[in-house]
Length: 91
Image (cartoon, rainbow, N blue to C red; front, side, top):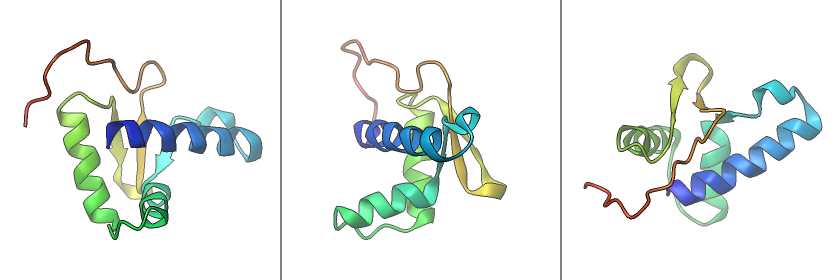
């Protein structure tokens, strides 16, 4: 899922940079993730996506935080998807 978020983030950044404010390229609406998952025929709602992203943040697989009011995950501008370097991911 972390790799999937990286791809969605890249796509989201591209779209934002082309259409709107480039300063918000590190912000990803949860609804964008839901739409991408639905496109992959995965029936997941916003609450489930928020839970999955929270786990990824907790496990340090994604650097960021939630802006709950606007339903956005704000990714770190520098290295939002840190490399694992052979470290195991704890369950």
